[in-house]
Image (cartoon, rainbow, N blue to C red; front, side, top):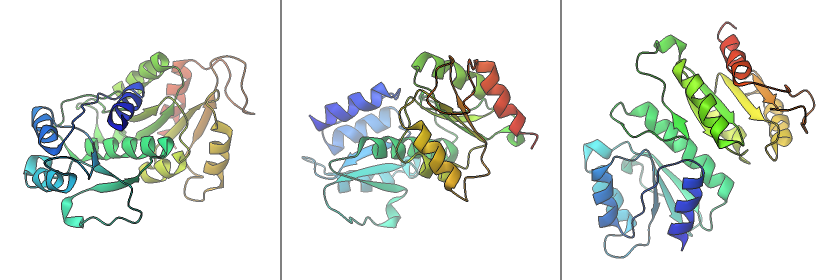
Length: 243
């Protein structure tokens, strides 16, 4: 039930998800299509999570795949020799889980040049884009079709886009890790005003340009850009390159 529920949650966020009931099945799926991140339960029948992780890291092709370990054991420590790991405590907080998955996928895309599978949540810019023009844009847009369109427009200009359909409770931590060139926040997203306040109060993040926008003239956030079109949002990001 947990496996199916988390799979549906991640699918709803725009990820392409493969499910496995045990370590052996998971290894087969990894060999078939290299994932950007793995959400791993330690307690599994047959090949358990630790055995799977060791087998995964023994193959150089998968040594840098980020793994999020799910456990009910508080304060669990995993050997640093097993590559990039993150712990998600059970039962998982949905916002925290999505935050860690988005960050893991982003880091995976940055560290590997061999990934061919494209996930909507993190869009890699075209290979032909000049390195100096690349930067991260953190995007929150509640409308999935508009999110995908804006995602493509920014990616075509050489940006790496980390996108989501709702505001995460720990979005500021994600921003601190990514240090994006700009943050675009849909004003209709729940909790956006609290996130803006939290970002503004952080000395580390106060220099990151933030634009809160509304597609209409209805917004709960004072100072939001109303009637914002995609070209307006792209223009805001582009202007940050000259600063």
